[in-house]
Figure 1 (spheres, rainbow, N blue to C red):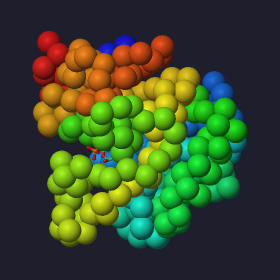
Figure 2 (tube, rainbow, N blue to C red):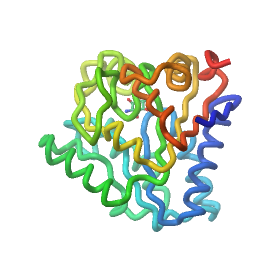
Figure 3 (cartoon, rainbow, N blue to C red):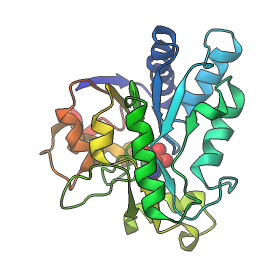
Figure 4 (cartoon, rainbow, N blue to C red):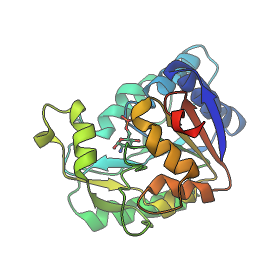
Length: 242
Ligand code: GLP
């Protein structure tokens, strides 16, 4: 794993945007694996700025998002479909037909998950997979478990994730209890992964991802086995990695 330490969130976002921009410049028809959550917002804002400045062209880029809440309509403001439109897709020239987010509105689990996996595979898996990390070490919505997951599946969210994500909903009761997420096997097939993390709340998870044992009880720890994993994190998130 390559670790890039940054001063703060702004710095982390700028560097992450640089890595994503480099991918788009070097391979205009790249497949990007995209993530949601508060962590990538700053990087997406910088990509939009660079697009507006005429430095980036997304017209041939293909994207696959990691995950989506099960049971939310695409136009629900809490859905990851909505998030991606809000922070990236509606601001750049990516072709909507080339953007993919698991279909949380489709309650048929088999159709929503197997279909998504087949699409990611047909696209050849992401050239670059962006990842945030949950306080409990989850990536995508792959929660701590007894075994690593394989392809896209339907997951029951843990209390810790429901609690952490409730800040974006009116109350914890409004947080969906299930989500569709790319599995660890799918994530590991990306040619390069870029994990971003900031803030002290992530310090334990970041430590366990980099230095802990490789175990499904910290799903991100599997990235130690990835041949091209980059972590860009601020000082607070790396506090336990001195
Ligand atoms: C959510 C998402 C993850 C994300 C994580 C961290 O549960 N499913 O993809 O990485 O939360 O979110 P945040 O960046 O808001 O801390």
